[in-house]
Length: 193
Image 1 (cartoon, rainbow, N blue to C red):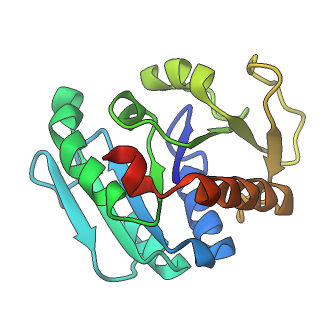
Image 2 (cartoon, one colour):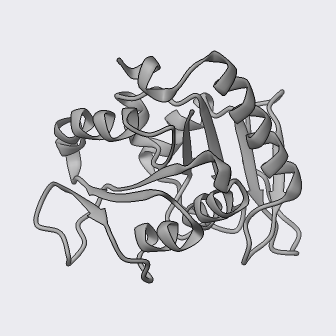
């Protein structure tokens, strides 16, 4: 199964959701991918790096949570299109993949797209408004304060989570059920071939 975890902005808990799902569902044998649309000091332009050590980076956190493999892809502007083929091969080689990205969905269709919304974080990325309509379910961050909700599309599951875990039993059960249904239909590799 291919799971994408996207969201409307930076620093809203997407990486924590990914790590939490990896930790809660170790039987999935996850390959995790973090896609950054901005440069980081460790990157030289457009690149994909396999994370080999659990550390404080997001891709390192995925390994620490139990991912079988973890990758970090960085691509500014339109460069993600050049990386999409490599990422497709990485994902196809995995029994299950979990990808932190909104924008990669333009080249790889996920089986499940989870969209993180933090009502207290006001800035929305450009890719988020388009992705909002494609989301299969919403993960709403509850910080214990009265919240103003953005108009989310109706008739889709909503899971309320709290920091620092950013995960709930209901969310884990939902993803587990989708994993089981997808396993009955076939592997990620067969769908991407």
